[in-house]
Image 1 (cartoon, protein in one colour):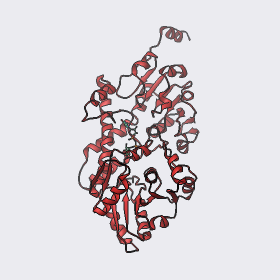
Image 2 (cartoon, rainbow, N blue to C red; image 1 turned 180 degrees about the vertical axis):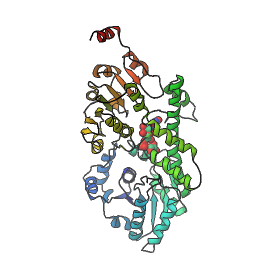
Image 3 (cartoon, rainbow, N blue to C red; image 1 turned 180 degrees about the horizontal axis):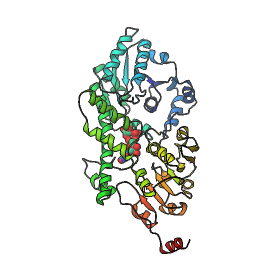
Length: 455
Ligand code: UDX
């Protein structure tokens, strides 16, 4: 068993640390935020993630997992240090490596024995070489330090599961010493290990994430065409999915991908290509399509309604996907400012994203409109003129088509996640617009028409 330190307790670092402890290693997670460290020691996870808190509490109680702000004590006699700090996007699309550089310097100044440094953060190809050089330059003691790449493929909401039961572990090393240590650490995980050189490992991460982003943008592109030619994207995706070369996953058209990875990693790879004098046309297209896709329903709704001024707008879902409280690059953030500018009165529901959203849009008047947060999807629908579905939470999916008819003032729904069958919505006389499928119209009954004429 190894003595492991993990730098950074975000999704990547904390989940990795907890999973290594679960597999019997002695782990210390390092963060600069002392409040966060105290919180984790008390058994509370700083992120909303299935099963994470239970494993944190168990491994802390059993003495295999600890948290500290004292990086020196964590790094000095570690066998392996994993770096899992953020690489946020800079305005030019490149990855900000300053957090990694800070950790590298702290490692160089702290270590007193041979140590393998493993970069888990997503970094541009060649960064591991630079980190190794950087650590060598600042190294205080005469010890062996090598850097390896071990990119992370976890998805938010299933991060623990994705780490413990990963489809593959990528290790990028430049020596058998480094390779053997990583093979050893992962032995008890019993997962397929792909051992490559460092630069390939760095590239595998971007190429994988960007391929998935491309797949989603491709389906969104086809979905938009489906609407124009009268085809149904869900039927098309089903037909495609039987071809094993295409596969059945990530074929869901919607209002674009969000989150902390796809938007950032597509821009970063585009930037890397540009820096190398190459134009990555596929990824540029994926980025463009995604940007347009996020507000495609807003534009449809605006054409349909002329204005949102004074309308009660139900918003179901704020996070970029279900199972997380993360709002990064969420479609809601692209749409809500426009609705507020237009004077909409928004009633928003999200089972876990509310707190984070309220930090950006506090309850009450905002721009020309207002926003209120409600406790249930039905409360959001109550007396609404129009409804937008941005996230396919189970709580939202459990609404029946008839609920839109029953609770809304006018059953007009713009569904960015294709939750409902068009036929069911039509049968319930709900005007339903979704992605890549035919829109339904509401039938104005004769009695209503007469009623309207007389009033
Ligand atoms: C992703 C990758 O899945 C993971 O392997 C990588 O390490 C980090 O990036 P994550 O961002 O947590 O994980 O979420 P994911 O479930 O992949 O969804 C990303 C976005 O794509 C979401 O906004 C989701 O709504 C969207 N999506 C996904 C679609 O629009 N259609 C799909 O078919 C699948």
